[in-house]
Image (tube, rainbow, N blue to C red):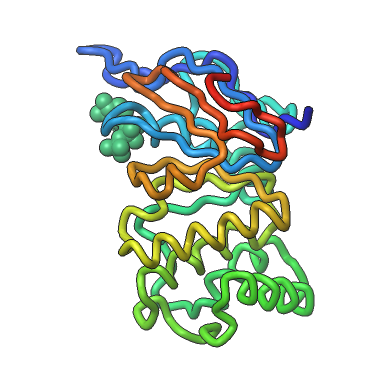
Length: 240
Ligand SMILES: Nc1ncnc2c1ncn2[C@@H]1O[C@H](COP(=O)(O)OP(=O)(O)OP(=O)(O)O)[C@@H](O)[C@H]1O
């Protein structure tokens, strides 16, 4: 067992003083290294809230989130920023690239913040742009790239510092079907060849079909957790 994410009975309640909304309601979730898992559920079911709690962008009202055994709910705001930089890659539906920077600079940015020396940065950037099949677009600015290309750069940025896992909140929501399929191919390849752990929320059935495990949230609770047959993790299929 190599648990990367261990969310232990976590809850998040909005509007506590008026009409409380249990956005995440007593959720228990384990993610093992190397998973390729989709979080699905109707609009408002709590997917973004759960990803934000796991990624340390928000704190639960109850319960604990452990990443590689470390309880991140106990960290201060500054410690969390540092922890996120070093351990978690984020991909958002709106890409969130910095418009004035080139694709290369967007990917390099966090490594620069971390003081990674130039030769190591260059080597990592080259490797990542080969992996996202965009070695010819290093110097393009986001506005010169298609949505699919921008999202591939966002995936490269998320991976630049070799995080423990990548959280992707509806990564294909703003992509046409061909770009979505291409992004999924790249994510699946990175997962298979480099054992990068992906947890992504989605409404997109084609994305759901590519996942090896599908977790369904309804009203802030996990209502089903299904693994595909014959994954390398030995999940036998059906309900976990
Ligand atoms: N900052 C907030 N203040 C109050 N309520 C919130 C806040 N953020 C989310 N909620 C509520 O929490 C619930 C879960 O929202 P969340 O965004 O996590 O759902 P979701 O499954 O990601 O939805 P979608 O698929 O539409 O993005 C919803 O009822 C939402 O209205």
